[in-house]
Image 1 (spheres, rainbow, N blue to C red):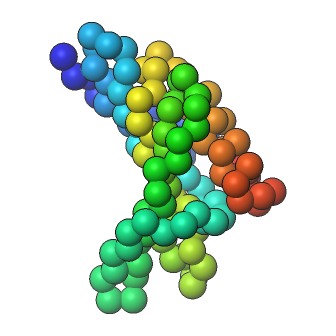
Image 2 (cartoon, rainbow, N blue to C red):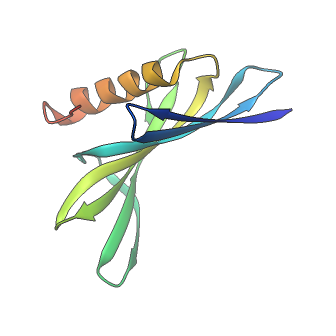
Length: 116
C-alpha cells in the first residue's frame, strides 16, 4: 500500500513523502530556500524567459537517503536550487533530519551559501 505524507518544516518548507508501507521505503520531494545551484545540468525546460533545470542523480551511499537530485530555477537572473527529489528514503526519517541531510549535500558540493 502507498501512503503520502505531507510536512511543513520551519514554517515555510514543504516536504512530501511517498512511501510503500510494506517496505518502509519511498521517495521524497521538497522545497529549498533558493540555495546555490552548482550541479551539472541533466535536463532543462523553458517557457518564454523562464527556465527550470534538473541535476543528475547523485548517489550518496547513505542508507537512509541513497540518492538525490536538485531542480534549479532562475531567480532574478541567477540559477538557484529550489527543489529536491530523494529516492529510496527510510520513511520513518523525520522530515527535519531529511532536510539536514539535503542541506549537508548542498553545503558539501556547493559551499558555504546554504542557509538557513
